[in-house]
Amino acid sequence: MDLLKGKRAVIFGVANERSIAWAISEALHAEGAELAFTYAGEILEKRVRPLAEGIGAKIILPCDVTKDDEIDKVFQTLKQEWGSLDILVHAIAFAAKEDLSNPYVLTGRSGFHLALDVSAYSLVALTRHAAALMEGRSGSILTMTYMGSEKVVPNYNVMGVAKAALEASVRYLAYDLGPRGIRVNAISAGPIKTLAAAGISGFKEMLHYSSERAPLKRNITAEEVARTAVYLLSDMAGAVTGEIVHVDAGYNIMGM
Ligand code: NAD
Ligand code: 0WE
Image 1 (spheres, rainbow, N blue to C red):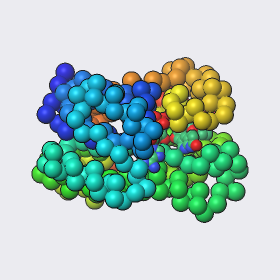
Image 2 (image 1 turned 135 degrees about the horizontal axis):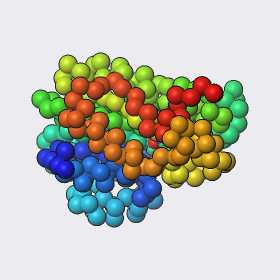
Image 3 (image 1 turned 90 degrees about the horizontal axis):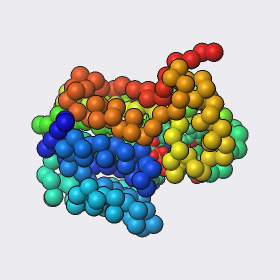
Image 4 (image 1 turned 120 degrees about the vertical axis):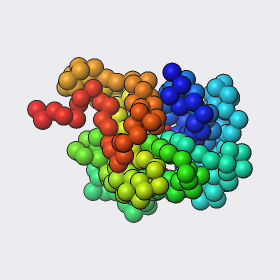
């Protein structure tokens, strides 16, 4: 359909072929976008590089978002190779495993900082760098969130607090960058079995619980998230910014 023909996109958050960021990448590629990828460390490079090269990506760089020098290097390279940028996809989250099983009240200072740094502050830093390459273009920025920011989801804990900060950041960034024609939005996805979900005990039961209660009576797929991503990142959503779009089979609307 060529909704994104000629647009250049940088993707943060592919770990493997099950990643939400990978489903988004495939959909952006199908709409004609040119893609650059980052990976968080050498172990993931082995997974990400073949996937990225398979859809013709030429820029594939390391980026641990807790490291300012690695972020700087990514955007230096994008400036050199492309000169400008149209799209940023942020699909990154991390909290220490014990902070996703212990009671929230036991979250220590370092676990709190880690979760908020990787999962929320990184959007601010990446957006600042990306916006500098979006001058004079209609840039679009997308992040991924989860309903655990709005309501208590047992064990989501410090990640829920980080996602609340992430969603508020979407609104403040949308306000800052709106005058420059840059839009910032988030997709709040229902549970999907990815690497990040595989580490969560009882995830299968969570999928079952959600599918029974959601209006559509089913779970969602990463491909469905990707189709909404194409919409938000394209000119189809030219007047949409600061928005949190739920792609969750309607789960979040239920009160009882
Ligand atoms: P995933 O494990 O495939 O992706 C998470 C990514 O975060 C990985 O690529 C990982 O390398 C990256 N990451 C972690 N720490 C990093 C760091 N320090 N620097 C750079 N990258 C780092 O899992 P996913 O489910 O595709 O998650 C993508 C996003 O979607 C996350 O923000 C997650 O919170 C969100 N989300 C997931 C679900 C779900 O149920 N899977 C639901 C709603 C929202
Ligand atoms: O955002 C997420 C998960 C993000 C995540 C996952 C892990 C697992 C491995 C962040 N950090 C880590 N750290 C690890 O060591 N989701 C939306 C998926 C998810 O995670 C949950 C959920 C859902 C849904 C945790 C508890 C309850 C529900």
